[in-house]
Image (cartoon, rainbow, N blue to C red; front, side, top):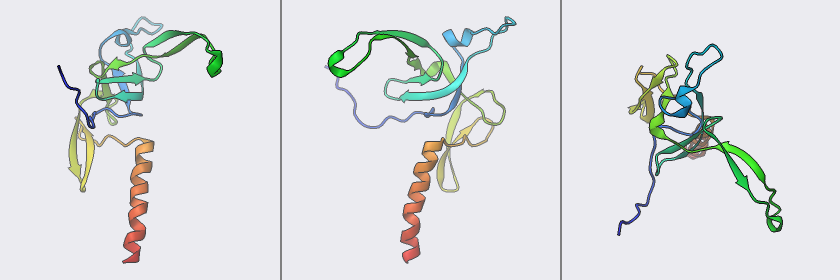
Length: 145
């Protein structure tokens, strides 16, 4: 019997990144002029273990939910984003605006994501807050020395 792996799994695409579809149903979206415009959107959720992401406004599916009065849950038909394979999306290069691959480099002693153009992919707002919090926590310790 196969054992399930435990631990952290990292992904090169993070929550909040801007991505474009490079395959699948959302890749074949057409505008009013009849020209194909692959869908671009923001990552809402990442499931790195299963290599899946949810993109805001893409792959909308309908879920039929029964009401549960004991839990005060209303029933009805709800629309939500479905999981999409990571291989169907590509990160958007911050410099050119085109799909790009990402690699990791160490710059100024920090591990950062770098696009093919060589430009650093900016961190997302919540990640910046966490990094700033760590710096603020270290600053009082250094001032006490």
